Length: 253
Image 1 (tube, rainbow, N blue to C red):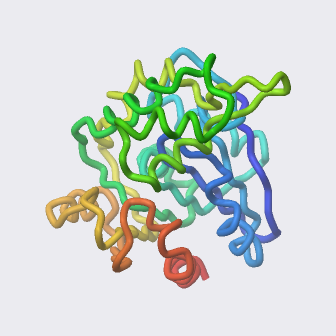
Image 2: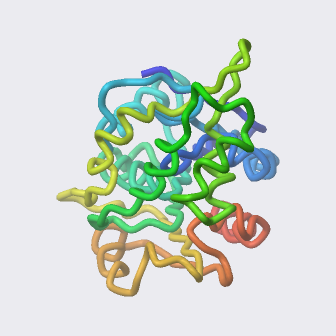
């Protein structure tokens, strides 16, 4: 699978994996900052952004994509940041290939099985009648009935692409992401452990990680540290970028 990416800076490799329905563009500012000390690869995962589309979307496939990416770019070892879905990919990758990961940063996601949580997102996106809209504002108005939160609508609309002929289309592979949604909320499974340093960053206002999840982290990632960033939700890196940057930089350097 071809993965679209952007590269920043020089130094030790640092890979950044975005979350569900996100893209590498969400990380541009932070990737630029991290590029002052690291060689950063911000990656569009399969079925997202400008990366290739496929008929399946599973954690195992995204782990395989990441391994091929490292082989293609001749990266023997890297630090990895993964947010939400990207965090699950990063965790599974580190457990499967511990020798390839120097340090792991997991952003607001736990190794556990999650309940469905994006049905309102899909409803909002499916409500957009692409053949009829002439502006992003029209698309947003169609979404608002199912997605009242302004910030979430703006995040999703970053996936709306205007073509040269003036029509609109979604960048992500909506059909596959909807069909395989259950695959990305699965629990991380491993008989082994990742003993290298692991930083877990939690948004203080987010419910994605709770106290019970700390046991799972301790079991699979015994050399872990959990940092809570106050007054930030699930998109902690976007809501508190400086605090996020400081926490990750201290951990990496």
